Length: 284
Image (cartoon, rainbow, N blue to C red; front, top):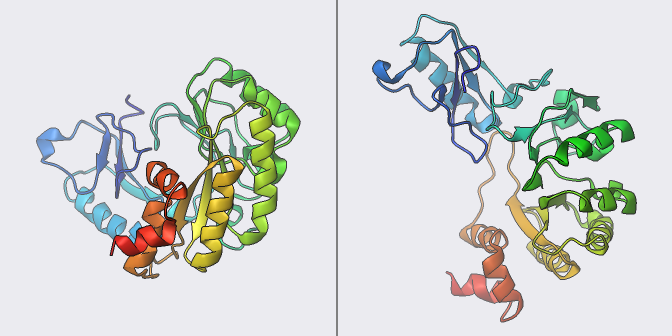
Protein backbone atom coordinates (compact mmCIF):
# COMPACT_ATOMS: atom_id res chain seq x y z
CA UNK A 1 0.00 0.00 0.00
CA UNK A 2 1.38 3.39 -1.01
CA UNK A 3 -0.19 6.42 0.68
CA UNK A 4 1.01 9.47 -1.26
CA UNK A 5 4.48 7.91 -1.19
CA UNK A 6 4.97 8.88 2.46
CA UNK A 7 7.52 6.86 4.37
CA UNK A 8 6.32 6.10 7.89
CA UNK A 9 8.95 5.39 10.54
CA UNK A 10 8.23 3.81 13.94
CA UNK A 11 10.60 3.70 16.94
CA UNK A 12 9.53 0.12 17.72
CA UNK A 13 7.50 -2.62 16.11
CA UNK A 14 4.18 -3.62 17.64
CA UNK A 15 1.41 -5.90 16.43
CA UNK A 16 -0.21 -2.83 14.85
CA UNK A 17 2.80 -1.54 12.89
CA UNK A 18 2.23 -1.47 9.11
CA UNK A 19 4.48 -3.71 7.04
CA UNK A 20 4.18 -2.27 3.53
CA UNK A 21 7.22 -1.10 1.53
CA UNK A 22 6.90 2.46 2.84
CA UNK A 23 6.98 1.43 6.53
CA UNK A 24 10.25 1.24 8.48
CA UNK A 25 11.23 0.62 12.09
CA UNK A 26 14.21 2.47 13.54
CA UNK A 27 17.22 3.85 11.69
CA UNK A 28 17.16 4.10 7.89
CA UNK A 29 18.51 1.19 5.85
CA UNK A 30 20.93 1.58 2.95
CA UNK A 31 19.57 4.17 0.55
CA UNK A 32 19.08 1.62 -2.24
CA UNK A 33 16.38 0.00 -0.11
CA UNK A 34 14.44 3.23 0.37
CA UNK A 35 11.65 3.81 -2.19
CA UNK A 36 11.06 7.16 -3.88
CA UNK A 37 9.04 9.28 -1.49
CA UNK A 38 7.52 12.70 -0.92
CA UNK A 39 8.02 12.92 2.86
CA UNK A 40 8.99 10.96 5.97
CA UNK A 41 6.67 10.81 8.98
CA UNK A 42 8.00 9.50 12.29
CA UNK A 43 5.05 8.21 14.31
CA UNK A 44 5.51 8.02 18.09
CA UNK A 45 2.95 6.35 20.36
CA UNK A 46 4.83 6.05 23.66
CA UNK A 47 6.27 9.10 25.42
CA UNK A 48 9.32 7.14 26.55
CA UNK A 49 10.27 6.76 22.86
CA UNK A 50 10.42 10.50 22.18
CA UNK A 51 14.18 10.96 22.65
CA UNK A 52 14.91 8.03 20.37
CA UNK A 53 12.37 9.27 17.84
CA UNK A 54 13.98 12.70 17.76
CA UNK A 55 17.32 11.05 17.04
CA UNK A 56 15.64 9.06 14.27
CA UNK A 57 14.40 12.32 12.80
CA UNK A 58 18.01 13.47 12.47
CA UNK A 59 19.10 10.09 11.05
CA UNK A 60 16.44 10.13 8.36
CA UNK A 61 17.00 13.78 7.49
CA UNK A 62 20.63 12.92 6.73
CA UNK A 63 19.64 10.54 3.91
CA UNK A 64 16.75 12.43 2.29
CA UNK A 65 16.11 15.89 0.93
CA UNK A 66 12.38 15.51 1.68
CA UNK A 67 10.74 16.85 4.87
CA UNK A 68 11.04 14.58 7.92
CA UNK A 69 8.17 15.27 10.32
CA UNK A 70 7.60 13.85 13.79
CA UNK A 71 4.31 13.42 15.66
CA UNK A 72 1.83 10.97 17.12
CA UNK A 73 0.02 10.47 20.41
CA UNK A 74 3.26 10.91 22.38
CA UNK A 75 3.21 14.53 21.16
CA UNK A 76 -0.45 14.99 22.14
CA UNK A 77 -1.63 14.64 18.56
CA UNK A 78 -5.46 14.93 18.72
CA UNK A 79 -5.92 12.62 15.72
CA UNK A 80 -8.11 14.84 13.54
CA UNK A 81 -8.69 12.12 10.96
CA UNK A 82 -8.06 8.44 10.40
CA UNK A 83 -6.43 7.15 7.24
CA UNK A 84 -6.64 3.34 6.98
CA UNK A 85 -3.25 1.66 6.68
CA UNK A 86 -1.30 4.87 7.30
CA UNK A 87 0.03 4.46 10.84
CA UNK A 88 -1.57 1.11 11.69
CA UNK A 89 -1.93 -2.13 9.74
CA UNK A 90 -4.75 -2.53 7.24
CA UNK A 91 -7.77 -4.07 8.97
CA UNK A 92 -7.44 -1.83 12.02
CA UNK A 93 -9.96 1.00 12.08
CA UNK A 94 -10.71 3.97 14.33
CA UNK A 95 -14.26 5.31 14.14
CA UNK A 96 -14.08 7.83 17.00
CA UNK A 97 -11.53 9.80 18.98
CA UNK A 98 -11.49 10.90 22.60
CA UNK A 99 -13.37 9.86 25.72
CA UNK A 100 -15.92 11.65 27.95
CA UNK A 101 -14.40 10.22 31.13
CA UNK A 102 -11.58 11.77 33.17
CA UNK A 103 -9.64 8.81 34.56
CA UNK A 104 -6.61 10.08 36.45
CA UNK A 105 -4.18 7.74 34.70
CA UNK A 106 -5.46 8.32 31.15
CA UNK A 107 -4.23 11.00 28.72
CA UNK A 108 -6.89 10.45 26.05
CA UNK A 109 -9.27 13.30 27.05
CA UNK A 110 -6.33 15.70 27.26
CA UNK A 111 -4.98 14.70 23.86
CA UNK A 112 -8.14 14.02 21.89
CA UNK A 113 -10.96 15.76 23.75
CA UNK A 114 -14.24 14.29 24.94
CA UNK A 115 -15.61 12.30 22.00
CA UNK A 116 -15.56 12.86 18.24
CA UNK A 117 -17.24 10.54 15.79
CA UNK A 118 -15.27 10.01 12.57
CA UNK A 119 -16.32 8.78 9.13
CA UNK A 120 -16.52 4.99 9.37
CA UNK A 121 -13.77 3.12 7.54
CA UNK A 122 -13.97 -0.64 7.11
CA UNK A 123 -11.92 -2.91 9.34
CA UNK A 124 -12.32 -5.86 11.69
CA UNK A 125 -10.18 -4.51 14.55
CA UNK A 126 -11.84 -1.58 16.33
CA UNK A 127 -9.27 0.61 18.05
CA UNK A 128 -11.54 3.40 19.38
CA UNK A 129 -10.71 4.54 22.91
CA UNK A 130 -14.35 4.34 24.01
CA UNK A 131 -16.67 3.37 21.18
CA UNK A 132 -19.64 2.78 23.50
CA UNK A 133 -19.54 6.47 24.47
CA UNK A 134 -20.57 7.34 20.90
CA UNK A 135 -24.15 8.04 19.88
CA UNK A 136 -26.53 5.16 19.24
CA UNK A 137 -26.65 6.19 15.58
CA UNK A 138 -22.86 5.95 15.23
CA UNK A 139 -22.66 2.63 17.09
CA UNK A 140 -25.39 1.16 14.87
CA UNK A 141 -23.48 2.26 11.76
CA UNK A 142 -20.29 0.64 13.05
CA UNK A 143 -22.13 -2.60 13.82
CA UNK A 144 -23.69 -2.53 10.35
CA UNK A 145 -20.22 -2.20 8.82
CA UNK A 146 -18.99 -5.08 10.99
CA UNK A 147 -21.68 -7.42 9.67
CA UNK A 148 -19.44 -7.75 6.60
CA UNK A 149 -16.32 -8.58 8.66
CA UNK A 150 -15.07 -11.65 10.51
CA UNK A 151 -12.50 -12.19 13.26
CA UNK A 152 -13.73 -8.97 14.87
CA UNK A 153 -11.76 -7.60 17.84
CA UNK A 154 -12.66 -4.61 19.99
CA UNK A 155 -9.03 -3.97 20.97
CA UNK A 156 -9.61 -0.42 22.16
CA UNK A 157 -11.90 -1.79 24.84
CA UNK A 158 -15.54 -1.65 25.83
CA UNK A 159 -16.30 0.49 28.87
CA UNK A 160 -17.83 -1.96 31.35
CA UNK A 161 -20.57 0.30 32.66
CA UNK A 162 -21.82 0.86 29.09
CA UNK A 163 -22.13 -2.85 28.31
CA UNK A 164 -25.89 -3.32 28.39
CA UNK A 165 -28.00 -6.31 27.39
CA UNK A 166 -28.90 -4.42 24.21
CA UNK A 167 -25.24 -3.89 23.31
CA UNK A 168 -24.35 -7.50 24.17
CA UNK A 169 -27.14 -8.83 21.95
CA UNK A 170 -25.96 -6.66 19.04
CA UNK A 171 -22.41 -7.93 19.51
CA UNK A 172 -23.71 -11.49 19.54
CA UNK A 173 -24.93 -10.96 15.98
CA UNK A 174 -21.35 -10.34 14.77
CA UNK A 175 -18.44 -12.71 14.09
CA UNK A 176 -16.52 -11.77 17.22
CA UNK A 177 -13.03 -13.02 18.01
CA UNK A 178 -12.19 -10.85 21.05
CA UNK A 179 -14.04 -8.38 23.26
CA UNK A 180 -11.79 -6.35 25.56
CA UNK A 181 -12.79 -4.72 28.85
CA UNK A 182 -10.62 -2.93 31.41
CA UNK A 183 -10.52 -3.18 35.20
CA UNK A 184 -7.76 -0.85 36.31
CA UNK A 185 -8.80 -0.14 39.90
CA UNK A 186 -10.37 -2.12 42.78
CA UNK A 187 -13.54 -0.03 42.55
CA UNK A 188 -13.99 -1.13 38.93
CA UNK A 189 -14.28 -4.82 39.81
CA UNK A 190 -18.00 -5.01 40.51
CA UNK A 191 -19.13 -3.24 37.32
CA UNK A 192 -16.63 -5.22 35.23
CA UNK A 193 -17.95 -8.53 36.57
CA UNK A 194 -21.47 -7.37 35.78
CA UNK A 195 -20.39 -6.64 32.17
CA UNK A 196 -18.76 -10.07 31.93
CA UNK A 197 -21.97 -11.75 33.09
CA UNK A 198 -23.97 -9.73 30.56
CA UNK A 199 -21.68 -10.84 27.74
CA UNK A 200 -21.72 -14.44 28.90
CA UNK A 201 -25.53 -14.46 28.92
CA UNK A 202 -25.43 -13.20 25.32
CA UNK A 203 -23.49 -16.33 24.38
CA UNK A 204 -19.83 -15.31 24.58
CA UNK A 205 -17.33 -17.77 26.04
CA UNK A 206 -14.44 -17.02 28.36
CA UNK A 207 -12.05 -17.12 25.39
CA UNK A 208 -14.00 -14.29 23.72
CA UNK A 209 -13.89 -11.95 26.73
CA UNK A 210 -10.53 -10.38 27.62
CA UNK A 211 -9.76 -7.76 30.25
CA UNK A 212 -6.86 -5.34 30.66
CA UNK A 213 -5.84 -5.06 34.33
CA UNK A 214 -3.48 -2.31 35.48
CA UNK A 215 -1.07 -3.55 38.14
CA UNK A 216 2.03 -2.39 40.01
CA UNK A 217 0.65 -0.95 43.25
CA UNK A 218 -0.73 -3.58 45.64
CA UNK A 219 0.00 -7.14 44.55
CA UNK A 220 -2.28 -8.81 47.08
CA UNK A 221 -5.28 -6.76 45.96
CA UNK A 222 -4.36 -7.07 42.29
CA UNK A 223 -3.99 -10.84 42.55
CA UNK A 224 -7.45 -11.01 44.14
CA UNK A 225 -8.91 -8.84 41.36
CA UNK A 226 -7.27 -10.93 38.62
CA UNK A 227 -8.52 -14.16 40.15
CA UNK A 228 -12.06 -12.81 40.55
CA UNK A 229 -12.14 -11.67 36.93
CA UNK A 230 -10.96 -15.10 35.80
CA UNK A 231 -13.58 -16.87 37.92
CA UNK A 232 -16.25 -14.53 36.57
CA UNK A 233 -15.68 -15.79 33.06
CA UNK A 234 -13.04 -13.68 31.27
CA UNK A 235 -9.33 -13.91 30.51
CA UNK A 236 -7.48 -11.14 32.39
CA UNK A 237 -4.24 -9.64 31.08
CA UNK A 238 -2.04 -7.79 33.59
CA UNK A 239 -0.20 -4.65 32.50
CA UNK A 240 2.41 -3.02 34.72
CA UNK A 241 1.85 0.70 35.20
CA UNK A 242 4.32 2.90 33.32
CA UNK A 243 4.88 6.62 33.80
CA UNK A 244 5.29 8.97 30.85
CA UNK A 245 9.07 8.94 31.31
CA UNK A 246 9.17 5.16 31.93
CA UNK A 247 10.92 5.82 35.25
CA UNK A 248 9.16 3.14 37.33
CA UNK A 249 11.50 0.23 38.09
CA UNK A 250 9.93 -3.09 39.08
CA UNK A 251 11.49 -5.99 40.96
CA UNK A 252 11.85 -9.39 39.32
CA UNK A 253 8.92 -10.63 41.43
CA UNK A 254 6.65 -7.95 39.95
CA UNK A 255 7.80 -8.86 36.45
CA UNK A 256 7.13 -12.55 37.08
CA UNK A 257 3.71 -11.74 38.48
CA UNK A 258 2.86 -9.71 35.37
CA UNK A 259 4.22 -12.42 33.09
CA UNK A 260 2.10 -15.13 34.70
CA UNK A 261 -1.06 -13.02 34.54
CA UNK A 262 -0.57 -12.20 30.86
CA UNK A 263 -0.38 -15.82 29.73
CA UNK A 264 -3.71 -17.65 29.94
CA UNK A 265 -2.14 -21.07 29.42
CA UNK A 266 -0.06 -20.54 32.57
CA UNK A 267 -2.63 -18.99 34.89
CA UNK A 268 -5.37 -21.42 33.84
CA UNK A 269 -3.15 -24.27 35.01
CA UNK A 270 -2.09 -22.41 38.13
CA UNK A 271 -5.68 -21.60 39.14
CA UNK A 272 -6.36 -25.32 39.18
CA UNK A 273 -3.26 -26.04 41.22
CA UNK A 274 -0.90 -24.50 43.68
CA UNK A 275 -1.64 -20.76 43.32
CA UNK A 276 0.00 -17.78 41.69
CA UNK A 277 2.27 -16.76 44.55
CA UNK A 278 3.70 -20.27 44.91
CA UNK A 279 4.42 -20.32 41.20
CA UNK A 280 6.20 -16.97 41.37
CA UNK A 281 8.37 -18.22 44.25
CA UNK A 282 9.25 -21.34 42.25
CA UNK A 283 10.40 -19.14 39.32
CA UNK A 284 13.04 -17.32 41.37
